[in-house]
Length: 92
Image (tube, rainbow, N blue to C red; front, side):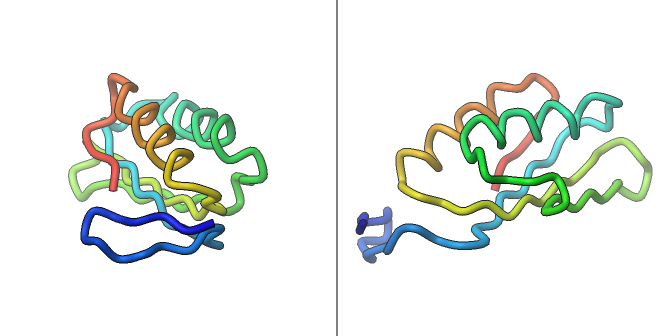
């Protein structure tokens, strides 16, 4: 499946190992909440594909997940759901 991205370039789906980076407030439930949203939109995702980093002062967490992106709509829905989490500050 092809899609046109915002720069006008064509994107070919599926994309294996598409990185999603989520930055948010360091909280005990942050990784679990983010993982649940990712699995909802990318059911084949396994938590072993998740890397977590803590900020230097320990106030923020950065999670990077590699998913199999199947369509632009899937990615838009995933980004929207992640941004809706109150503890999420940024999704890249």
